Each structure stands twice: as structure tokens, then as C-alpha cells.
Image (cartoon, rainbow over all chains, first blue to last red; front, side):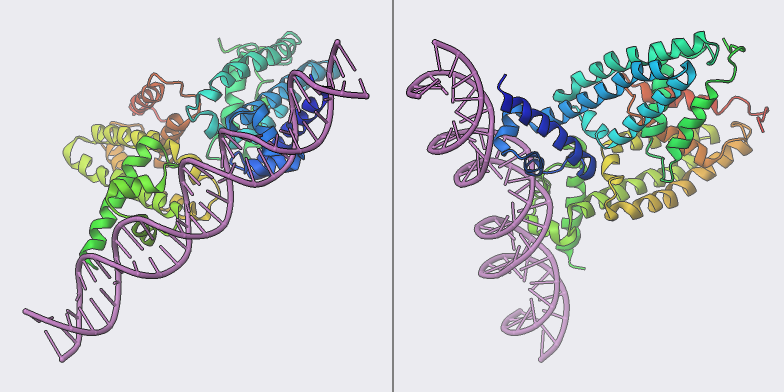
Length: 186
Length: 186
DNA sequence: TGAAAAACGGAACATCGTTCCGTATTTTAG
DNA sequence: CTAAAATACGGAACGATGTTCCGTTTTTCA
């Protein structure tokens, strides 16, 4: 692969991530290309449609979120690793709230993303959760999907009227995982 | 008011409602004008911006949903009236799921809609709920906001993977309102 | 080092929201 | 009823955006 290709690809992904974050997914393509220091032609050769660029950025961030799991697991005790990763996950979902409409718009370009998300994120949490349960620090009657779904719901709800309500709710939820450690509800 | 104004206004609202439903809120303005049998100039005189048209359609449908309440109350016994209205409300929320992103986009043109929604919908449910509670057909430890919020969450969640899950969840929720009629959790 | 291959940049095109103004319709004064 | 005034209409024209295209530049490799 030619070195300029790799360089432009990286610049485009980084630029798109920044622009999407500040101006939303409907930001002009020209702005993304300019910020990356390339022409629109270059952008379109790598990402034939706008949706391809959105999907690529999303995939990139899924990776970053999932990859954080083993690192946190190595650096912290079980529960703390789980809690920190869930906060990281919550930040990811919150940041991507603007993308949700596009992802669920029925555009076939986004269809594979759901599968990719599950395939990457579930294996990331599971070890964290199992370690925490095994250490007796988290109740045993919740599974990975429960947690992922609950935190996503809390962060992506349209009823989050400012003031960091979502953050508080997630913190509360995480805290709740500790109780009942020795008192299964099953 | 000139009669052609009234006629074109009606045609535009009806056309916009239909086009938004089939092609989403991003449908071309020209398509809406053409379907209404008017020029784009006429459309823009009545709705200076695209968002004004969206807001007008939304307000119209809020009215239709709210106005259904007293009619159902007159035609059915208390609980049945409440249940039927909630299904009507659920259909409204589901149909407007595509509008949600636009409404929460921060566009100031949509800011008043939230207030209008509450001002119209809450007074619509409250009598239905109170009648059902008074008749002993619904538990007394839920209020109108609880119900509106819960049904809206169930219908607008991004985790509704097809197959009418939202409908089933809402039906379940409505059914749940009956239990505990004589067993308050307060 | 010099073609050949690959990628680049940005002008050009199609489509969209929005504006503008000459024309058609409706109202109203006499 | 009629003619002038007021109002509204239609759609061409404008600016911005996604996308395509091709002459030019960069990179590769023999």
C-alpha cells in the first residue's frame, strides 16, 4: 500500500471524527476533506459514499472502546475495571447519540454495524463481568447483555434533559451491581 | 382570509403529512409542493422554513391524538377507553419516531413543540386515567406522566428490532395497569 | 532513472433548500 | 357590475451540498 494512501486515510478518519463530533454527521464533506488536507476526490475514492465514512468512523470508535477493556482489566481490580469500562462505554454511547438516527435509518450501509458492534463489545465486557462476579464483587444474576442494554438505554434516552442525568443514572446503576452479591434474585 | 389560502394550506399540510410518512422528514420540499398541487413559492409563504412545516404537521397530529381522548371516553367504559387511547398514543409515537431526531436537534423552531405536546396530551390522558382509577379498574399508584413516559420509551427505543416488539411491550404494560388495583405499592 | 501505475485535487454536475418577481386571482370601492 | 388595489401564486434563479470525472502529481519498480 502506498504511503500517501495510508497517511490520507488516517487523516480523513481523524478529521471526520472531529468534524462529526462538533458539527454532527450532516457536516459538509468539503469541510472534512479540507480539515484533513486532501481534496474531495481523495475522500470519495476511499469512501465512495458519505455513509461509508460514517460507518468507518463508527467502527473505529467501537474498536477503541472494546480495546480499552483488556487494558483496564490489567490495570485495575475486577470491579473497578468493570466500572471504569462501563463509564467509557457510556461516554461512547452518549457521544454517538447523534449517529443513532442515521444508524437506524434503514440505510443498508449501516446494517453490518450492529453485528460488528455486538461481535466486538460483548467479548470485551464478558471477561470483565466474569472476573468481577468470580471475585464476589458483583451480583451473579446479571449478564453482559443486560448491562450493555441498560447503560445504552440510560445514555441514549431522549428524556435526558441536560445536567448530566445520564451520567448519574449510569453511576447509580453501576453501584447497584454490587448489591446482592451474595443474594441472588434468581 | 382568502379562500385559496385556506385551500392551499390544507392541501400542503395533508401532502406534507403523507410525504413525511413515506419518505421521512428529509423528503424534498418540491415533492410536497407538487403533491399538494401548488408551487414552492406558495409553500414557503405559509411555512418560511422547512422546520415550520414539520412543526405544523407535528402540531396537527398532536391535536388529532389528544382529541381522540374525549371521543373514546364517551364510547367505551373507563379502562377500555384508556387502553384504546394508549394504543392510539403508542401509534402516534411510533409513527413520529423519524421526527424525534429533528425535534431534539436543538433547532429553536422545535423548542415550543415540547411544551405544546405536554399542554395538549397530559390533559387528554388525565381524565381517562382518573375515570379508570375511580372505577377501580386501574391501580391508583401511577400518574399520567408515568404512563406517557413509559409508553413513549417503549415505542421509541432504538432496541425495537422489528416484529412488533414495541406493540407487545405496550400491550403488556397496559395490562399491567390492572393488577394491583386493590394493592397499592405506596 | 524513467515509464507505468496509482492516487491526488478540485472543477463540474445534479439536487436540494430558499429567494424573488412577473403574473393570476381575489377582494373591495364606486 | 366593474375596475383598481391588494393579495397570493408559480416556477425560474441562486447558493450550498453530495457526487463524479479527468488532467496532473506522486509513488513504485524494473
